[in-house]
Every structure is written in structure tokens, then in C-alpha cells.
Amino acid sequence: ILRSMDRIGYRPNIVSAWGISAQLGQTAGKLADGVLVAGTFAWTGKLDPRSEKVWGRIKTKFKLDHPGQIVLPSGTANSYDAVYIIAEALKLAGDFDRKKLRDALYKVKYEGIIAKYDPAFEPKYERMDSIVPTHYKMLAYHNGYLTPIEQTPYATKK
Image (cartoon, rainbow, N blue to C red; front, top):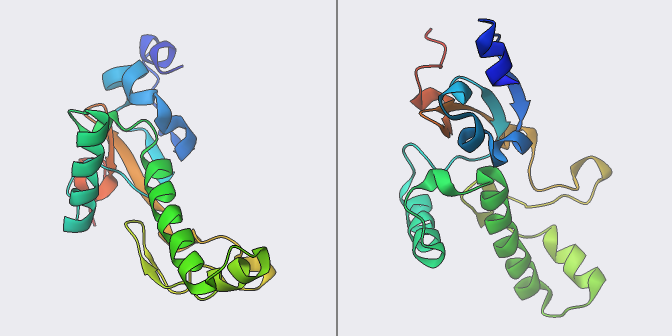
């Protein structure tokens, strides 16, 4: 789609959910630059020290050269935090019993790479996900990689 739009000189603002982050940079190259994506995390750009350490372990384990090679940046970070949230809940539950584990999830306080989960879950219908709207941020493709928009030329200057 981006190639076809480029051929006719049509360049609208494109905003998408994080699912397109899987291959857009690799398949569209420079044409992806400026495409905005709502996501929870990008491994490119400036990382905090903890995220830098996690990237270092990912890089070594999977023999990657650049954080842009992580196929689903938000999904990878979300999964990383989820594993630790579940591990903390198991410690609190002291058992693999489903009800004890569920109740422990409501007590987990964990500082992840996406956010500080305090608590990770709440026992009410509206809050059965540890990722909440405030954890989302706008990301933009820049130089072929998904990067926090404020670290790109696509950020709105105020």
C-alpha cells in the first residue's frame, strides 16, 4: 500500500495499532518512515538502564545486531513483564492452585520495563488486564525502525 501511495504522490498520516510493527520496517523500508503506531514499547532509541540490560540479554541469546530486529517490540516487552508478574504471583500464592494464583495476581507489585504495576491486576471486571491505556505511547517509524515518537522528527513541536 505504501509503495502504491508513493507512486501517485499520496502521503497521508497513517496511524495503526502495534500489530503492523511485525514487518513494516523490513518490507516497506524508508516508505514506512513517519507511520505512527500505538504501542507499549520500542527497543530502539534511548532506553532506560534496565531496558538496556534486557536488550543486552536478548541480543546475546538471539544473536541480534540491532534492537530493530525484534519483530514485535511491544509484544516482546509485554511478554517479558508478564512472565515476571506471573512468577511474582506464584511466589505470593505459594501454590499452583488456580484460585490462589488469581488472588495473588491482584497483590503483585512489580516494576517492569513497560510500567510499574501496582497492582498488576484489580479484581473488578473493568481491570482484568495489566496493560492499561496509560501504558500506551505513540511510536513512529524512523530510519526503518519503530522508535518513541518524541525521539524522532515526527513529534509535534509545541
